Amino acid sequence: MIESLATNARVVAALGNRSIKQTIRRPQLAAPLIIFPTALLAIQTAGAGRAVDLPGFPPVTNFLSFMLAGAIVQAVMMTGNSGAIAFAIDMEMRFTDRLYAAPILRSSVILGRLAATAALGAMIGAYFVVLGLIFGASINEGVPAVLWIILLTSASALAFGSIGAAIALRTNSASVVQGIFPLVFVILFLSDAFFPANLMLEPASWVAQYNPLSFIVNGIREPIIAGWSATTQLKAIASVFGVGALGFALCAGAMRGRLRRGV
Amino acid sequence: MAAIETQQLAREFEGGIKAVDGVDLEVAAGEIYGFLGPNGAGKTTTVRMLTTLLQPTGGRAMVAGYDVAKDAGAVRRKIGVALQEAALDPLMTGRELLELQATLHGISRKDGRERGQWLLDRVGLTLAADRRVGTYSGGMRRRLDLAAALVHTPEVLFLDEPTTGLDPVSRKAIWEEVRKLNDEGTTVFLTTQYLEEADQLADRVGIISGGLLVAEGTPTALKAEVGRPHLELCLVEQAGKEARAQVVLARFGRPLPARDGTLMVELEHGTSEVGPIVVALNQEGLDVESLDLVQPTLDDVFVHKTGQHLEGAAKEDTGEVEAIPE
Image 1 (cartoon, each protein chain N blue to C red):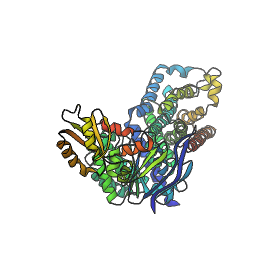
Image 2: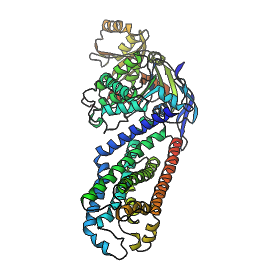
Image 3: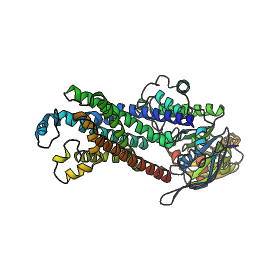
């Protein structure tokens, strides 16, 4: 039993390692994770900095500190999307057949992919924290907050990645997965990511208040601009679990469908 | 014990499409079995079922002593698979791919590294080992794919159209490697649409058409079933001499209808009659300009069984293969 678990863990690690290399070596997969969120962060911070003066805007030392969480979750969703595209490419070129013909659990193939997404999420979390600190952001809760942000970023990437993986498994098509890319921005703009929900107009404000992404954003943002709040963090954790549970359930269903269809 | 055994193996897809419709196979351990058929005949579907990638919808298949549906994990431990259109990640290096493959088969990192290097040497890819697969030629990819299938020393090796699209030199290199593996005791199940490949490599051949196994046997026996060799010849200044020539040819076998001015006779007693025919024609004052001894081919077998030609035969004849410099 333990030996079998260890073997599977080794397989998941090897597949994860391969997936990370695949992302790094394919610029069209790697660029959206860093370049788009960094560019948007720079543009918004430079152009919309006076938003902090709006009545009802949360108290912050500067706009960059507020925006950092938005950039991180944007990168997280891009990571999930990128991982799903890479997974669909693997299926299109039948690389997954090579994996399924080996004596491993089929779920290891998905777990390997998601392990890579989680690792990339952690790297991206660390990158944005460092970037923010360099350009004048302050993190109120210090080092524990940095570690928490990296952990939450990694878990969120895993959760959103599982939904992307399910879409890839269901459609078998990289172009379809790529087609959901604009949806990422719809979900982002209808959340607290770039603008406080309480300052939005209805119905966007209502949607943003209940968007799970808003809870995750606030879980990342609060230790940066304010302090620890158990309620906020529990909501963030519950959102990550909720999205992840949905993603894994969809993956399991898609996997069963593939086996039935024989693809 | 047979290395591969199927009983009424079938696969029906959505919409009622029967890709494989009740195939019975028995491949002995240590044999090279050629599975021949045109595109869409059911070769790849059969291989995908035998390699556990696809669940059969009917019948039963045992590979290396295990049921492909009930004991897929055990089957996967015993088989090596090199699929059509080599499923390789162009961003990985050859070495990385082999080491990953070793991990998938539960081989330790150290052993996997050593085995990978040994296989790279074996298939002649040592110098390209640390290059990305995307930079490999078609032949190099196939050799790497073959090496990956051998990482765990499988008992049964499935090769799905291993040389399709390769230039003749790369094709021969793959053939040599397959023969070597077979000499070492590996059972090889090879699908191909190339007649020459089946003829050269396979101990026995199964011909599939429309999801059904239409013929099976050694290449020699199958060819003998469809007829004797025939002679095609043209005479010097042939016009007006055909009738006299046909009389002479009839003494040696059954004259066949002339095609594009070429006289043809099916030889009653085999190739030993070629010399006497030329002499007899000469004695009648009929000088032979050219002659060609035509042996029955597996395509003739296919035509005999299905009434159609194999697509691959036409492709081979016109040399429509991708020529990729190594």
